[in-house]
Image 1 (cartoon, helix red, strand yellow):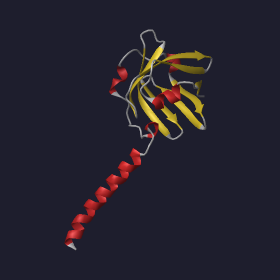
Image 2 (cartoon, rainbow, N blue to C red):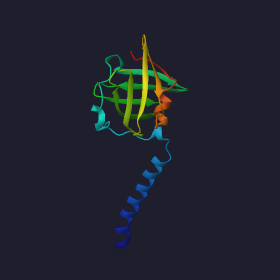
Image 3 (spheres, helix red, strand yellow):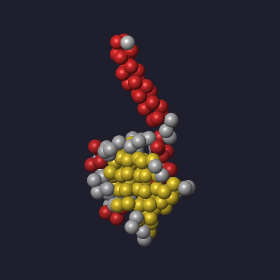
Image 4 (cartoon, one colour):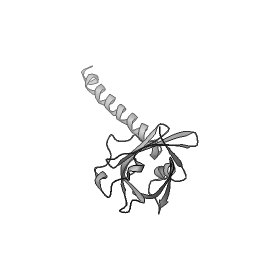
Length: 146
């Protein structure tokens, strides 16, 4: 009996670790849980142009997509129940944004942006190493959230 009392907590700990490993391994990269804070690299590069700051809404299939660009140099994108976040900075001339240091993907990706009225559009510059981010930036038109 004494041996069972000592072994039972260890077995519970191992079982809970295995369950948590299974719960994150089966997720699509864009659906991994996001960390609570963006990359410390957020101060890298130029500030995000003021007209881009705030929340922008779009639609990808049946999923609502919300992109938030913050003055602090961070971004959060929500697609359905999935969330991604990271750092963003502008090019020196302000015509491009570079996304990096993110979760679930830390690769860099650059996008030209354009605003017409209350709509925002992104065009990739080169290849973005994060397919989940490409899926929510390329070919979507965002509308400023009200």
